[in-house]
Length: 304
Image (cartoon, rainbow, N blue to C red):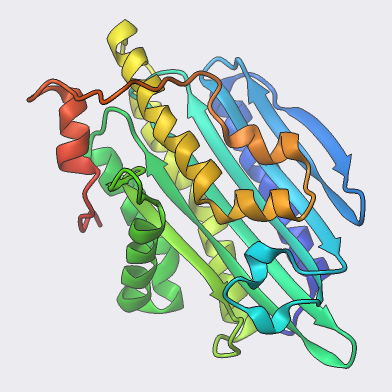
């Protein structure tokens, strides 16, 4: 199969619909649909829930944007493509449950194409998913990683899974804090850009990751949704959410690309949690559940 943007777009829009349907059934409340157009070309559909029965805030975005010149975030490590027209499309989601015992989760799958007259298109895929617990449970983390691994194994086996798992550990890392954002999962980018990966394989892996999301996350949310919590847990959740905000605004490629390419700000920043706190030089009590997160879970491990 050759590059077919129509087929890719159909997959992404279908994936958005399937995921939103699964999340609405789980929460019990509907997502708001907000279609938008981008000045300069393209648009998308933002699906958002706020104040749900389970999700305090969640968003599942589809976007398809194009432009006359590549944004700086896309050419920083590929300067030979500067000046080309581009098309970019994908699905990106972030879910923030209200219950501190239920983890925040992120998933993204995307395709990028650089175009120039008289030259073959340069395309690549990227994506992944990662889990950010506040009060972590080993069985939940193992389930998430096992589902991620199963999605990758048909497309490169154990070696490819290890590569994408380690890439995720390296990527979702707050350098200024010297700590991980969460417990990792999968991350990949530039898949196909150098011509070494056939289109079928690159698109196949991307679909496999997207299709695995609900199975990776909803069983964890179902196990923890009824756990009682109080002010202490809620306060710690808000503190750790601050790390999420710091990463998304300082390091996240998708956020930077969206803002640099003139994307819709409301849709790009729907990933921000609705309530968050920062404290000066705070340390958890030794031996506490809050300390256990840092000491046992925010350290790369072979969870699968």
